[in-house]
Length: 129
Image (cartoon, rainbow, N blue to C red; front, side, top):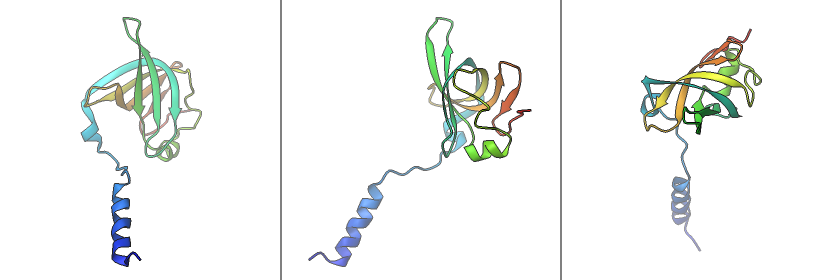
């Protein structure tokens, strides 16, 4: 028979082994002083918590396509500030200004999105008139 103390110890050990999903600090992941301007086609949109993401295919001057992972605010914050789920769609051509990831990967936090028609969506609010 297993004692209660042993059962508790096993439960605590198993709980501690589960992966933790902590929210990251913006300053730890992105550099506000290093901005990138990207133009390309949206290949994928994710409206997931804690942050929505846009995946953008950007063709370089050498003709090679690089995929960028662009982080937005949470879906709830975007909607509260005027975005709609159809504010952007797959294959839309957009221009993005964003804070680049500190690790140098093709990851950035969106500051401004300019659509083909010239209308803008910001990280915090959607000017979607």
